[in-house]
Amino acid sequence: MTNAILRGKPDAGNPHVRFDEGEVASAKPRRGSLLYKNLMMALTKSRTKALAKSLTKTLTKNLMMALAAAATLCGCAKNDANTLKMITEATFPPYEFLRGQEIVGIDVEICKAVAAKMGKTFAVENVDFDSVIPSVMSGKADIAAAGITVTEDRKKNVDFSDVYAKTEIVLIYKKSAPLLTAADCKGKRIGVQGGNTAETIVIEQFKQEPERFRSAAEACAALKAGRCDGVLVDV
Image (cartoon, rainbow, N blue to C red):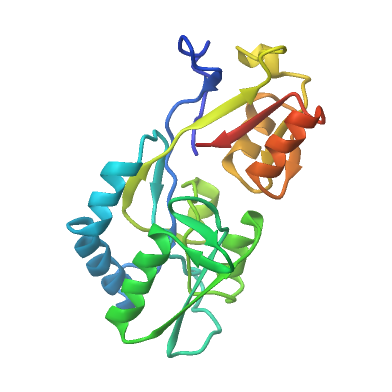
């Protein structure tokens, strides 16, 4: 997310500090490539059918999110040429999450459609969020879908698909110890998911290091246990 700033006090009845919108996206293959063309065709078709319907019913979010179909600027992934491999961090429903041992969600269905359009088999792997983009850059995967924020630094390494949804970053805190302004957050233990945009906000705006966790759920558990004072997270 770029230029995310604290808006001020939360709305009445809402115990969150809200941040301005920023783009979240996935990286995609270079324009003109076969993978890029097939991705755009599948995404367009999905928008006009089930995906658009699902998004309309489920999304109430304000931070721009997109399908992440990522490829390094320097080359292609080192995977089976007949397989399209997706990398994700499956803790962000309805986009990507675990149903038992199976990775499912809106992003998974879109990437499956891309693979089918290309005449390839489909594979998906779940990793920690801070490993999603590096997995594509190293050639471990062809594409990534995980609610990835668009930043100038990331654009140096990957391209991004069209935006199709919005989310919001909020600060969660205990009622007994509210954090209502940016000044309130400084010097406090602010939990984030490692590699997430929230990490950058804490470093650049609060001028301090965050408490890093593998997932937003772990960060919230730490808040409940008193190991941090607030959690900055996508919702």
